[in-house]
Image 1 (tube, rainbow, N blue to C red):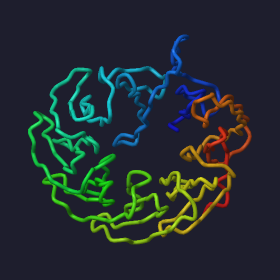
Image 2 (image 1 turned 90 degrees about the vertical axis):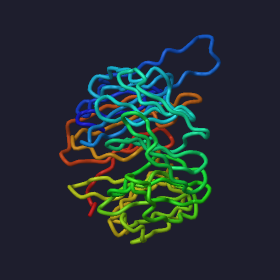
Image 3 (image 1 turned 180 degrees about the horizontal axis):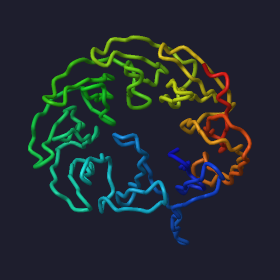
Image 4 (image 1 turned 45 degrees about the vertical axis):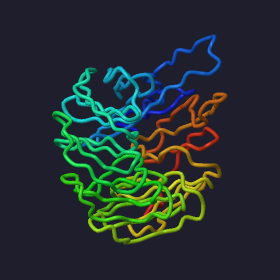
Length: 341
């Protein structure tokens, strides 16, 4: 959700809905071949920049940015990306298996290759780009000319995004099941945390701490400077998503699980509010500050995603913020925020 837009999938196509009226503002139509056996799909990524602005990207056949306001597509790179990061001055760090390239306005500025696949990152720093390799090395290249600045062996098989913990950068080893905190200036390891399993999602900062979520259904709060455990909770069922959510000026952790519960946790990881949807939570919860009453109807596409919206109607009644989320049956839920402490 961004300003007066709700970004969602409608019959497998990316669309923006007006929060005040529920009307469709724009939709990216996907041309379908009458002879192709499989339906063509696109891959989309939503990110927020340093200023908190929502940015949308398409990364299937080529890399492009989609304007939230009107759905206009701006090409960024002519080839698809295994992974990418967006820097300043229109710079794009683009990964294709073992190749790292710096692209600007659709043109390749430089490229370098690794013997092993690049499986962590890329991540832009002020003057460098960080990547992690399949052989367990974290590498920094100069942004200006791709000189190798440092290369540090960590665990085996690094994987996933390179996250932030204050001034440190976090990278995860799937084989060692260990999270490493590294100084991006020289690659020095400042601390490591044994997770005991793979991660459900990338670690993130919350209320001055670091939140780590594992597939053992552990939610752990760490000191970002030392990696020491400050609090921990064992969830009773499989976790789907854990993320910060601001309600009434206070930020809490929103936890969705396969049992259909949406739960809010305080900084001490204790429950402050809960709602049961009865079916698996799929969508990230957002708080809408406009007051429409929503009605939804689901029409899942055969062979496609289930969390789709078919129609949305609205009403001008109501004045308090409410919460939106989706479930595995394809329905959008409007939840009251009353009673949240």
